[in-house]
Image 1: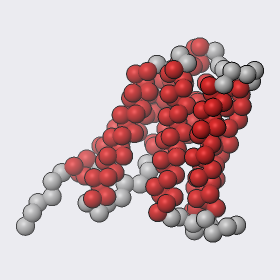
Image 2: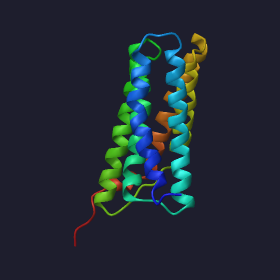
Image 3: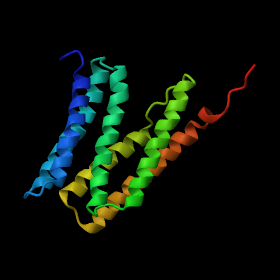
Image 4: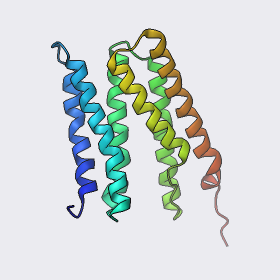
Amino acid sequence: MPKNMANYLTIGRVLMIPVFLVLMYVAFPGSRYWALAVYIVACLTDFADGYIARHYHQVSDFGKFMDPLADKCLVMAALCCFVEQGDMLAWILAVVLVREFAVSGMRLVAVEKGRVIAAAWSGKIKTASTMVCICLILFGIPHWLNIVCQIIILVTTVYSGAEYFIKNADVFKESKEA
């Protein structure tokens, strides 16, 4: 296995985002199913790169930065397409965006204080359930199931965001100077 296979997979996922977007916007029969296929492969690279990085000791600063960014870009690309195409309510996308920016901002503040905030299980569940819901929506599910998927995305997003802030509230407390 190459020295940084995990990073190659992450880069591959980033490169799949424009391919996914093109397939979402071209109008030929089955283009949305091709977009679904690209999205599934991209999701699989997310699981594979994490496993490879940990199992083969290929964890790198590049991977720590780029892997979550690639995930966020992939998910946001899909959700933006859904809003534009009428498959998702815009305010749900807004909640997802606010949560992502807020958690990323909190992590930046923590890093300045010499602390790393690891991904919580609720964040991993949010990511996995969101990816599954996106796949279902891409597949072309009935409207009622689409609503259920939007609710799942919303609830897991809000819950995981709240958990990050509750568990790490001390990050925002000013340290006492001597």
